[in-house]
Image 1 (cartoon, rainbow, N blue to C red):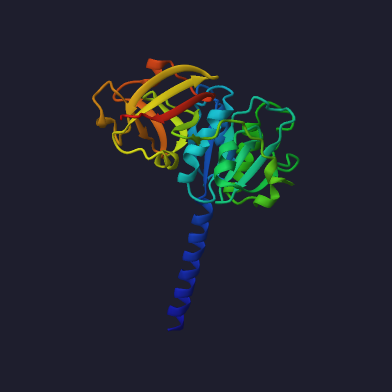
Image 2: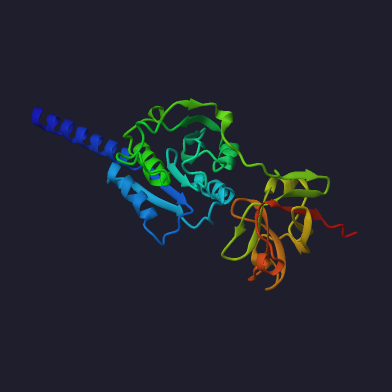
Amino acid sequence: MIIKKISKLVAGACLGALLLSTAQAATPLVLMTDFGTADGAVSAMHGVAYGVDPKLTISDLTHQIPDYDIWLGAYRLYQTANYWPEGTVFVSVIDPGVGTQRKSVVLKTKNGRYFVGPDNGLFTLIAERDGVAELREIDEKINRLAGSADSYTFHGRDVYAYVGARLASNAITYEQVGPVLPSESVVKIAYQHAVRDGNTLRGIVPVLDVKYGNVWTNIPKTLLDELGVKLHDPLQVRILHKGKQVAKVTAPFEHTFGGVAKGQPLVYLNSLLDVAVAISQGDFAAKHHIVSGVDWQIEVSKVNTK
């Protein structure tokens, strides 16, 4: 009887240790850069992370951000981060100021995710939507890949991948990253937030659905609901670049692309429940020469059918 009890206690302790080990090793590390994959830069970041802990789970958000496009990087974090578990560590490197006086930080959101990278606007949308629980500057005297002190142009490998891996593997605590910075000091990119102005909704084209040419906006479903838009209602859409009109169309609000005939325009809600404009089985952006970014504005208005 005693032997059986001891066996059960040992088995329980072993199972508990296994579960704890699995839980600690399961924190995902997600990488995003503008490096592309034609050379060894991304592989080097993976290698540094695995050097910290071979049991890490490493995923790639994307490495196809256009060169130096900090805004698009910020949006891709906004688009994807909330679908990852609490505790996930994101390493983001779109860093035209690498090696300069811009700060290297780790931002902890109020919902418990971590964002590692340069404080250059990359965390604009994450900070606004999820809130900043705490912001810390990376102390590179203790949190930097050994032997990399004379490297000034690859912080993605030498600092961010290394620190991100150490956080994800619990090799360091968040408090060991470095000194606390004021939460409100996060660098943010200025842009037009979505607003309602009478019967018109105004916002920007933050990004394109690049595969299909659909035009996404930052106008949320809540504002469309305020406007009283119902299924099949016609809407007027104006798209402007730096205040100059580039396109103007009238299209119905539909739930699916099949709500209109092939080749016809429609307004719909994208996967983030923001307003978007498309051509059914066509490329709206290409047809109307639309790009995206903070200097691309959009207006959506109800059409008076009376």
